[in-house]
Length: 291
Image 1 (cartoon, rainbow, N blue to C red):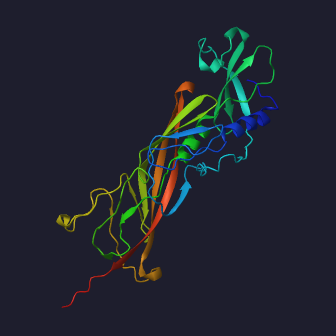
Image 2: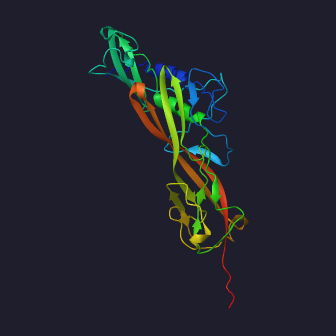
Image 3: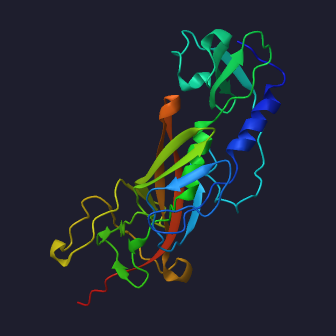
């Protein structure tokens, strides 16, 4: 395993190439309104408005919103190690970058960030070059070109009044931009990465110290259901909200977007998550019984 002292700088160079701002889609069905070393094509998009805040989970920063075309991105440094691929890929494989297998070897590059790539090194070359591409970074650029919006809360309604001890049904209104699926592709270094995003769960913080995790958008309430509990996304408040700020429970609905990406040319793929949050309030009263 080779660990050249110069690899940190080399890795920084390649990441600067990968992180050139992606183009952003501004219309249903996609479209590109910017250029750069990373080409992004949006296959599905939705222009509906957004509300709430956004963030990321899993300890990995969410992809930043695409910058204006021509802007520069800061290049992180990353220490990498190199292992020769043995047995080597067949002649003609993309990993050879058009070189003759007799002229050198293909190395797998693994960096401290847990990402890497492959690189061709000529015979006799002591200092490995930087990895050609980090497909996850390209996938994050593809995801950044999508419109992944916070959930659109349909219930609890801000104008609604709810009752202690009565089941509350929670649900969101799904759309391509608020629930998915949404798909985009990005290309860098001759490698295309396709990413598909969809919401896999919604975590409701109810404002009374409890949380409810729902695996879907929830079921809309119908009067015919009477006092039944929601079959998939419900809550029951045990105390009124009189003592809460503005006399209402202050809650949030946080959607977790799971992004699945593939890079067929590198035989690579993976997933990462991002979150989007919408606040809500609920006025909960007690029923006064007169004897």
